Length: 75
Image 1 (cartoon, rainbow, N blue to C red):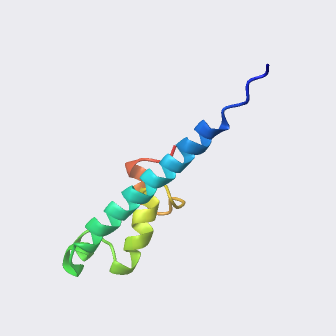
Image 2: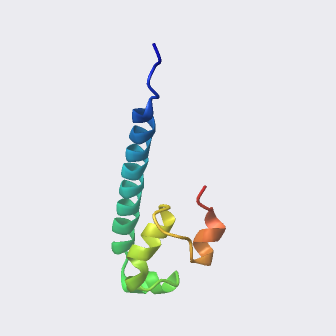
């Protein structure tokens, strides 16, 4: 008897990885939203960029900011 290819494992890993990415992005976004505008200005970030920064830092979006690229790339 031929055993089926265990595709459920790959699907399970992908779902788990997507969930982890979502929670990491959400945590980063919440932490950034806790900062006031003065602190954001001190680190060179505008409040309108917070969602984008969170997405880039959690591998959900393409890296476009030099400071995130320098910190570590998506593998």
